[in-house]
Amino acid sequence: MYASTSFSYRFRHKRLKEFFYSDIVNAPTVGIDRVTAEAFEANMVENLKTISKKVLNGKYRFTNYRQKLLLKGANKPPRVISVPTIRDKVVIKTLSRMLEDVYGKECKPDQPQAVVQLIISRLSENTFDSYIKIDIHHFYQSIDQDRLLCFLGKKIKKKEILSLIGRAIKTPTVPIGSSQKKRRESGIPEGLSISNQLANLYLSQLDTKMKGQQDFAYFRYVDDILILCKSENVERIKDETVAAINELGLMVNNDKTTNAFISSDPIEYLGYVFAQSQITARQSSKQRFINSLERLVKKVVKHPEDKSLCYRLNLRITGCNVSNGKGQFHRYGWLQYFSRINDFAYLGQVDWLVRKFFSRNESAPPADLKSLRKTYYELNYNWRTSSYIPAFRTSPSPSECRAFLENALGKAVSDDTSDAELIHMYRKQVRLLTSELERDIGALS
Image (tube, rainbow, N blue to C red; front, side, top):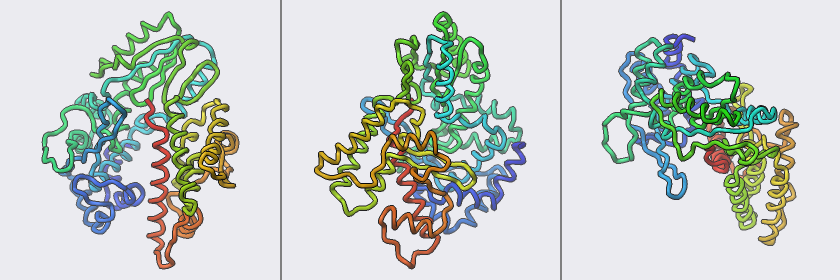
């Protein structure tokens, strides 16, 4: 679709309303203005009409993003996340849809599991004996804004669109209470719905040079790059790749850039560890998962009356699927992410440990306690028809919502609760549960 066509279509008042209800109405975070999604909705018609008018005539301006800091571990600087206001979130999410219209898959990073499966396939060929891992230093902060907008301008000719994207990435990110007005001069803010898309488009220029080569296999997920090759070509390929990255105004992180023989040094990539014929998860991720299960077991034992805790424990083991009702779904959970591992001994060990945690606390495990081994089988051989792994819908019926809240979580729901309130409560609980599952996986790089 042409950018101008998508722009005028996506930013109509009716389309903005659809986006608000499909993607933003349940947003848990607020921007620097502290306006919630509920407060925005109370005056939604007027808000969306104003957004549409200002965007289409090129006069829309973003509010400073609220700074949110995510800790990355001891002795590491926190990751800065930008949180837009609800009003700006509507605009940025609509821009995201427009970029999908124009660029299709080119603006979307490949799913980690798909990348991992390709790596497994190439390793099984035994064509290469070495690997190179390259990490780009401060990637998001180092993206050249002018170069990015120039690249986008090859397909997007309408100046109002490029100007809007430019204002979105130049808006400063500040802590609450700050009155900073200085624009961001370099890089793009992390946390926006367009951030990964713009970053992926920027590095697609590198992908064009690297993919399809005969003497090596190239993989990239965001700024983490893995190359499989033969030992005699390592230095040449590394130098060529670093030069191509430098051409984009980016620098390589030398501390995280390595090369080694596949036979002697396991490959750690996207949280996986590829060691000879065994494929497993990184040790830190395994331990984080076990720790989370142990904490939950203690809560189950301490509060046997809380039905939701047993449900959360089983959900931690199985993960879940969230469907959008259009045949697409997103998988959440530790084993859902690490479904490509073949470390069956670890799965058995965790199942044994969970029962051991109960015995340590002088309690018997629940009769319906689920297992990782069974989950693995359902994921890999029976996922289309399995009822073992919970599935949630983004647009459930009120009766589904009530049944889940009362039967699964043991929450009392008044008969006077409206259908809209039921759906809101359901979505809020699903969001909380899935956010817990995401924390088990941790950082990929």
